[in-house]
Amino acid sequence: MHNRAVHRLKLESDLRTALNRNEFRVLYQPMLRISPREWIGFEALFRWQHPQHGLIAPDEFLAAAEGTGLMALIDQWVIREAYRQIHHWQSEIDIPLRIAVNLSAPHFTSPKLIDGIRYCLSDSSISEGKLQLEVNALVAMRNPAHTVEMFTQMKRMGVVIAIDDFGNSDFSLASLRRFGCDLLKIDRALITNMQADRTSHDVVELILAMACKLNCEVIAEGVEKAAQLDDLGSMGCNSAQGYFFSSPLDPQAAQQYLRKARTVSVLPS
Image (cartoon, rainbow, N blue to C red; front, side, top):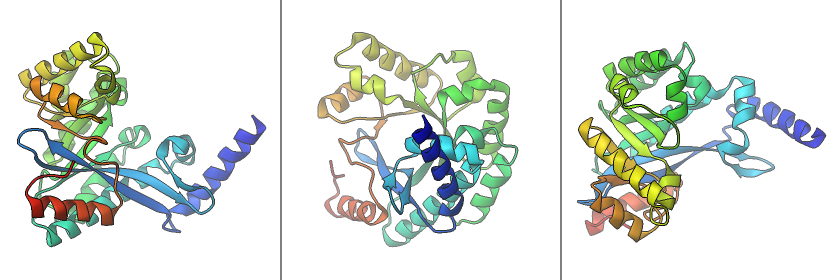
């Protein structure tokens, strides 16, 4: 316990200087339509290039970041960096792209959220509808009235609204109607288990039917096998992301992926 406490304090201390030292990185995982196979864009995944510990995923330092009150600043940095990168790609490669960024729970409840998003959008030449902001399903349900207000304001700014990790918690149809979100991202655990577990398969099928009634786009997360993709396609799922297409890529590798897709006219898999 003592060692964990010391490690946590050290992470918090390092986090306070990480932004100034340019230690944060963004990796990009492709989001693709299933049929016809075409681009949606990339999900921007935040990483910390720690000088001693190497590349660290958010799960390892999220609690420390929340403890320092830095999550809102980190989220805004990710949005600006992802926007800068997508602007560069679109100037180099003529493929329409959307960029997806996760909003942390502390940032989503921050009174500065909307002003921060507005600032990020005003500082970019990316067209409307190219920023997708994702909110975890559990976070969205903590305070439905707040969620409705935030989503309404974001949609006025042309932001695509997504509920992330959908299907891993209670979420009513009435809430979905109130939220007016544009997209549901099916929780990866359901996709992983749907071929071995009938209940998971039925839940995925139910989500797809519900999304169709609500005119919501759906992206299946965590697709790793061709059989999963075939099953999703047969159920009417229109989009997916996961290791079957690509692991998260650094900006240079993502650009090569884009170039390959444009050159051969068939998306890599």
